[in-house]
Amino acid sequence: MTTASPPEPVPFASLGLSAALVRRAASAGWRQANAIQAAVVPAVVQGRDVLGLAPTGAGKTAAYVLPLLQRQQTEAKPADAWTRRLRVLVLAPTRELAGQIGAAVRALAPALKCVVAVGGLSINPQLMALRGGADWVIATPGRLIDLLQHNGLRLGGLDSLVLDEADRLLDDAFADEIGVLLAQLPPRRQSLMFSATMPAAVAALASRLLRDPVKVDLRALPGAAAAPGGRPAITERAIEVDTARRAPLLRRLLATAGWDKVLVFVATQYAAEHVAAKLRLHGVAAQALHGRLAQSRRAAALDEFEQGRLAVLVATDLASRGLDIAGLAVVLNYDLPRSALDYTHRIGRTGRADMAGQALSFICADQPASAAHFALIEKRQQRTVPRERIAGFEPDPTAAAAAEAARQPGSGPGSNEQSGVKGRRKRKKDKLREAAALSAPTPASTPRP
Image (cartoon, rainbow, N blue to C red; front, side, top):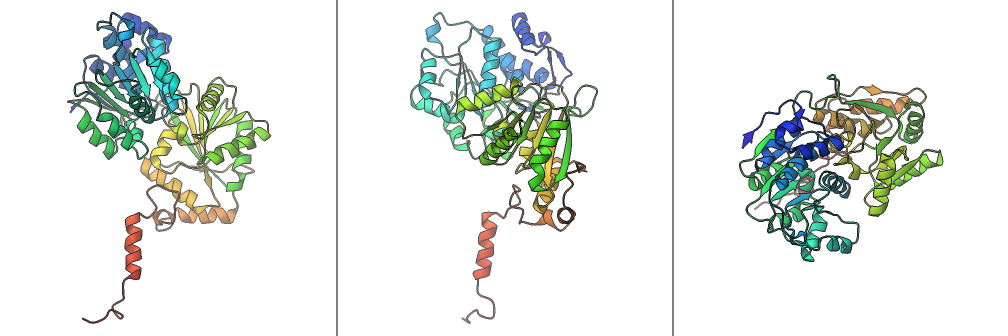
């Protein structure tokens, strides 16, 4: 595996892209190639396989869309538009990310036929759109399997495969579907994988899927997550507050901080609806975003938020992956995420495209597990976030003392009682061993042979 050292930002024109494509990229706001783009674009243009690892918001979409379009422009076009064969397949974990990728492709190459195929919508219009073939298909795994079962498309002539957000595509929700899809791919193709993290599943798939790939790893690059001037792209804050006072505190912050729009993360679909409804009762333009909503309502909520007609979008972790919301300066964790990885992806919705952002987290002072939970996230992130208290919303002293005790060595963080923290609950095997130990006869009661 070859490793490419990430170069400094350079003009896209110097990376082997045509003048016309460079002009369209500039119109889309991509005027200079950043580190991930400058390293990946030449390799993709040359037909190399690529493993790209970079923080959320690093610009991975442009890193593969632009060079793949360049490759298609330099190849002969079919004589008849109705004989199109699928050239590029992009797999994305969420409908929203698939839609954003499709919009980018259509803006850069309006002459190409690009079909976005996602669940939550009727399959019939998508099957109709695929009649006569398509140049690009951007799909979620489940809907792509549906299309294949309906003979809506074939993968045999595929030139390039892209796995965007590969770590999410390989989690438990998609693992089986990805295995089914990969088995139908042609043996000769260009494969590109992009991910913000490198868990074992991603490493294993990369070794099986990629051939002599260029590896671009910017996860630990100094300044990779920095805004212009070297300051941190994301300023993290942790605010201690009692559970019941989170909603009033959120309203106070919205009223006094001068934020244009805020993405608020909660743990459940019910909480998304509940918090959004509470905000609306107090005159705040807010909507919920979660997986139970129809796709049309999800798209409408995102569009209203991006256009500034909503001040607050209250979302589950559905919104933590892939979404690029222009001008989003603040992310707030109303409920803490289950894992440090989810925390990284949540706060990565801000501080994008060289803009600074803020990430706030509420720590429930009356729940010691909450303090232990955030301490574990800090440990996994290898950084400490100072605790704050807002005047008028200080937690009850006894509750705060209990939470502080939970942060001390040998207390909360080492306990398996913190069931809300991913990786901290007892494994099934451990529970079975404990049950076996409890039911085993003691030496005094063991019958002699």
